[in-house]
Length: 207
Image (cartoon, rainbow, N blue to C red):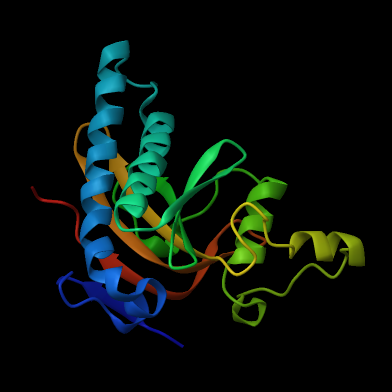
């Protein structure tokens, strides 16, 4: 099993990154923090334009902007951007990037958790395109019928049958921007937490 790797030098990407993104691993590792920073600045501008002090459009705007920014980067690196339920998924070397803001303040990745029960779409996304099932922390629900099990494990045609998910988890807030970034092979567990077959830390953009 892979361990944790601090990606402090994008010019020397890890074996895990090279295995997934090939010769473009270094460029992508450097681009992800820059793209998330740009997404934050777009979301921050939208939030400030509304003029609300607390609740505002920052969180939703940030995720939309992050998907768009990463999709644009994938296209620039020779990859693809495929639409699934109206959302662009960046695809590079048969791997799809899935950005997810798991907290609005610095928080250990081990505490990342969905606030609500996952939609059938999200559960299928992590099950069909995530790490192999035997790497899960908890066993699959035995109550599922054969039909439901098969549907849960059916790859999304829009993404491609062989496409695997690379999760990009981060924390941020409207005033301070991106705090932490992690990417790797995450699996969504039945208790709404995440287990990681492998993960890396990417340093936030400092430009």
